[in-house]
Image (tube, rainbow, N blue to C red; front, side):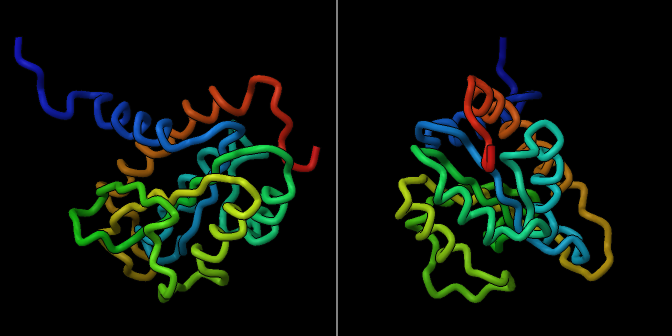
Length: 179
């Protein structure tokens, strides 16, 4: 029998394994970044919105005021992991997903976000949280265009992998923010 490359579920399993290996103890939070009016640039927001349905206390988007959410997570006791999700220029095919550890984020990045991810990451790490960015390569950032098929698939893959991780880590009696 021959094993097919990227058989159904294999890409998600690989991504989930990579994310689980990075996540430390404690709850897992997802913070989606982006601009939904510019097609694929809204990928992070769309992942967070999808995860907000099952995990309203652990998934937030830039529309929710990420800065305040980061402060709440910093003040929460104990360990935890925050995965930012954002479109990023990876010099790859549209829909490519790469997990970037916070120490690999360029600290002088030019950003369209109100507060640079590197600053938010530093605050979280100083409070004992682990941080990484799930980057999705956009295909189109044309104003008011539809999200490309490749990025729609990447959004589905990231949301599905994160949902399984969050279900395992965030349910077993853990207290959500503000409770």
